[in-house]
Length: 90
Image (cartoon, rainbow, N blue to C red; front, side, top):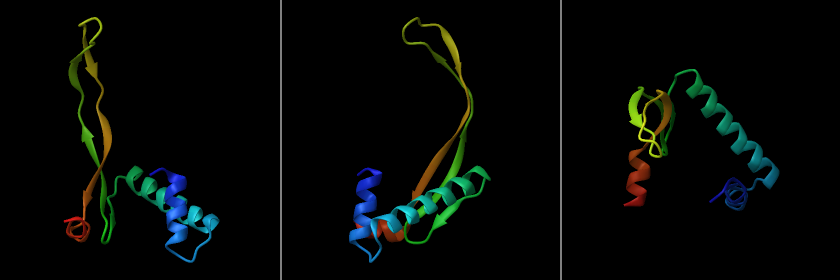
């Protein structure tokens, strides 16, 4: 499902117009990005928790040349599903 399909589904499941659904989704995404960039977790009750996880630099190899390279460390977004979501999918 892409973003426009999600907006259409949100509009169909609520009394919001597509424009209002898009604004709500964009607002939610902005809030999640802001909280994560500040180093905070973003728990959403019934859905789960978004958090940052730092992956340190590590050694690797260039597959074309076999040359040893260093893969830089990076922050990765981590999502842990809430119990309510897990139970709904079981």
